[in-house]
Image (cartoon, rainbow, N blue to C red; front, side, top):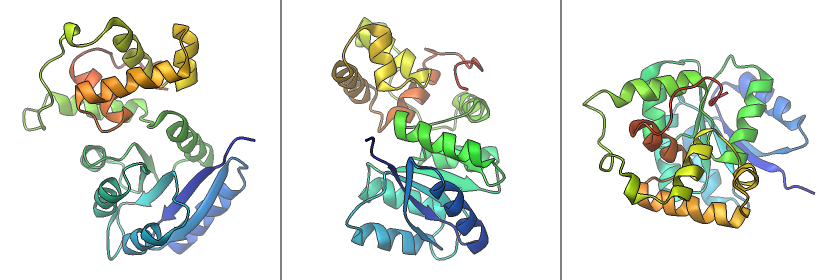
Length: 227
């Protein structure tokens, strides 16, 4: 039997948090380990937890410790935990800021339950989930000279042909198994190529690989690619 996706929730709005928890708990593939009312309690729970969540869904605007600071702490202390940013303010500055500090997905609070569950499943399977609007924001930010500079411009000689193929499929949000099937290689080999890509691009996660690929014009913003 496939392991459940372990989740933790952080939101100061009790009614919303309990409603979200109830929705997620109806899905047999998801296990909500705990829910808390602010970022400080979230970090405390993570530091003492016997079992860590795979994914944290956190609101951005919370008392004590907000979602931005929480994400920074999680990436520092618990780098394997993936953060989904949840907020009422689906604005470009909020989104870009959260992505820059390590959030792997972004959801508006008025999202449908189906979209919430889909995003969690995508993050669990692929490591990130950015819809076409978020990808557009990332693309727009790339042309801003004030943005943080990345590693030197793309050099095809720096990567093997297979690494480029794997990178392109990662940007199409394909899972490890999907990539292995499409390229007729083993999942373990895919993992090896992905690790090499992370090292060569100095990316922290697969979301970083996608941003790298966009900045170096390896992929285009095709709506079919980022659905």
